[in-house]
Image (tube, rainbow, N blue to C red):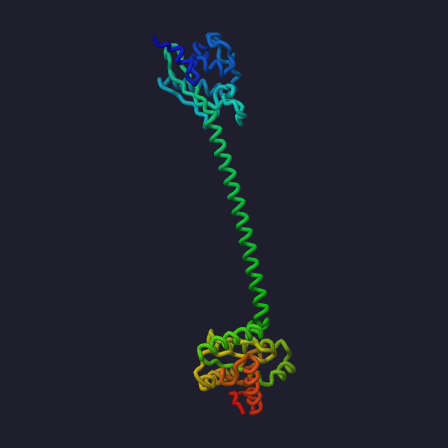
Length: 338
């Protein structure tokens, strides 16, 4: 014959039968063991509050669930996820737990509605809640780690951007003229060396135009260096507008400029460019309510006809410039070897 009592006592679920006034009619062995009760039968007839010190909040919750089960004639549920536990029972796990009491899912089902009796089923969810708490902690730690990592990445990106800007500033200071923002001697040397190497291989030609503003010292002496600087800036912008983006326009020093013109077929092309530059620069300039006119003289050398290195090409363009100055200024001359 099947021993139902023995089966009930062997399952890992707490079983408790009480009425609406919390009087006890039955407890199984599991319930007794986890409530520190030596004899389950000794509980019968007692009030549940004599076994547990229920907080007012949990007492209200228990009575509300009992009322719901009796009124609806069906089960009412209490979950560990939202409330942790209903009965302050000792923990079932032997290892150290993060919870003081057993975490419980509780189901309250009607037993005898006329006598307002219900059966309470208590399921131990401590291990599951431990795992959930562990997962939540890991998730929080991961979220925190991601937040820290993102903050670190942001700081690194900011530092990188700052370094890039500083690098750009340093490069600009080293390669561009501070007044006109044109290429300086350093960048001019690099650009010409690259042209020499490339054109030596390809056989193409490039021109070097050496410009010097006519009588610029008189402008500085009579009108001041502020006006002189404004004229230099204006001339620089004019040169950039009158040349191609592929050309290099550099301030060589003072009122001297050098333009590298790549991919030139012959001297005729350089003459056309020089004429265009002279005309553009000679247009009136408005400075401090003064209408000023500036002219320039230009000396020209051609790679490889007039030199195959930086110094030789600059020297020969300078010699041609000297001739242009001697012949009355505001003109150009191409170097011719004697």
